[in-house]
Picture 1 (tube, rainbow, N blue to C red):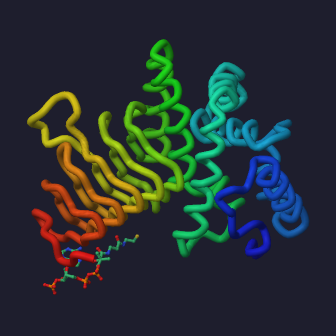
Picture 2: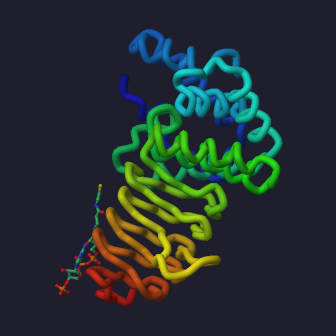
Picture 3: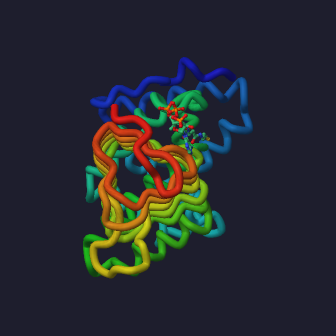
Length: 258
Ligand SMILES: CC(C)(COP(=O)(O)OP(=O)(O)OC[C@H]1O[C@@H](n2cnc3c(N)ncnc32)[C@H](O)[C@@H]1OP(=O)(O)O)[C@@H](O)C(=O)NCCC(=O)NCCS
């Protein structure tokens, strides 16, 4: 089945009810054309009846594949998502980012169920909320491990990540504890937002709005990648990058200023 009719565009302001209705319509349309996928999605979602419970069910399926029916894990995810409305709000904006910025994205339904970067990002969002609650930091770290084991994406739950984020492929992505990623940033596979190994405390990069970090970029230290800046594939960035500049190479140098 071609899925260009199943909600390809997700307007940033779209609410959870509309999104849930669109997902259901999309799944129903698969019943005739791709029954195996239809039953898979039905099984993953179970008895869910809104977007937040669908998100919890989907995350539980992928994070705890051996124990997806375990109500303890499911409740941890669902309670956190329902308590923190900003998780679903960010998920909707992320869906929009994946659909708009990834030429390989077919539709929202595909991103929600089959895009590793999207799924890992939403799981991080749950872990981040748990981390911030202090008494649930072990739960947050357990999720970090499961995300890493299942998707090859290692994001410390303390790291701060905005919304409208696009993670392309996502394999090998590492984001350290004190990193900040602002809204509308795009990050490709094998990117590291790491420390230099020489400092403790606030030691990770700050990525400002709308920056693009291409495949394999290593950005090291408490440095800033300015708004709208581009880091070329394979670069090692050791110094601040001005807003809207393009940097490339090892160590990275400015190759374009606008
Ligand atoms: C950054 C990028 C988008 C090019 O941007 P651009 O503004 O079009 O830059 P240009 O191609 O004009 O290159 C400008 C200079 O930077 C150099 N450069 C570009 N990319 C580079 C890289 N990854 N590493 C080292 N140097 C690079 C060019 O050789 C050129 O140098 P010159 O001025 O001495 O000739 C591109 O190089 C890139 O890194 N794309 C990554 C794509 C990717 O990650 N794909 C994975 C998809 S899964």
